[in-house]
Length: 219
Ligand SMILES: Nc1nc2c(ncn2[C@@H]2O[C@H](COP(=O)(O)OP(=O)(O)OP(=O)(O)O)[C@@H](O)[C@H]2O)c(=O)[nH]1
Ligand SMILES: [Mg+2]
Image 1 (cartoon, helix red, strand yellow):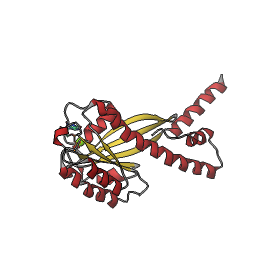
Image 2 (cartoon, rainbow, N blue to C red):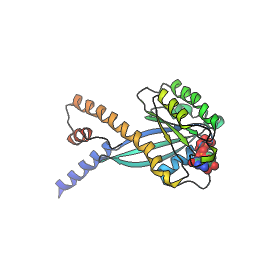
Image 3 (spheres, rainbow, N blue to C red):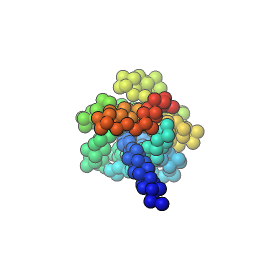
Image 4 (cartoon, rainbow, N blue to C red):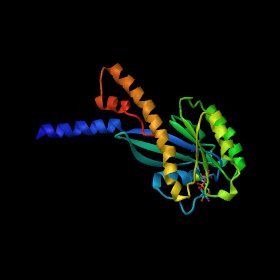
């Protein structure tokens, strides 16, 4: 009957309006494992072989947080200057969150974080955009050069959470997921407040959104 087909299209419209996309960029020196980390999160495995990223690779994953499906769009950026210079403006445009990565077995990659943060700040990324720090390659236990307490101090000073993990070690895969999931949770909390404000201006109320906002984020 006609009425049920009308109902169907109305609910699918509602669904498409509610699918939000969060743009998360992954930044850091070449060879720290940005491609492997993003691959682990979106594809669930460690790639056999990687090549230096040229420009950017997009990886997406749909995640469910408190009943809402959110598309996490991960921008796997190039660490090598010659492969990134024409793209930098695009990396930072309308970004929702930033993941800074260093290699725990390479002190230089940790020292260079300062430069990466400067680049980020230079592109007018708002202070409300969450940032996290990731020390990768923790599986190489006998080669560690960056002590945890040093990394923690740096993260604290820059108001970031620190994750020490490994894209390679399958036992760490949940930890890798939690890097992106914790950001998605924070973004969801921020953005649903925004949505509510917009809805009030319109004089519209969406009950589901209101209910979701009240429950606590699992992260
Ligand atoms: N042991 C170990 N090796 C890793 C890990 N993550 C990445 N690698 C290795 O490190 C090398 C570089 O990894 P990529 O992910 O390509 O590095 P990237 O940061 O994307 O480099 P660019 O694209 O040039 O910026 C590869 O040989 C990976 O196999 C890890 O957790 N443990
Ligand atoms: Mg790469």
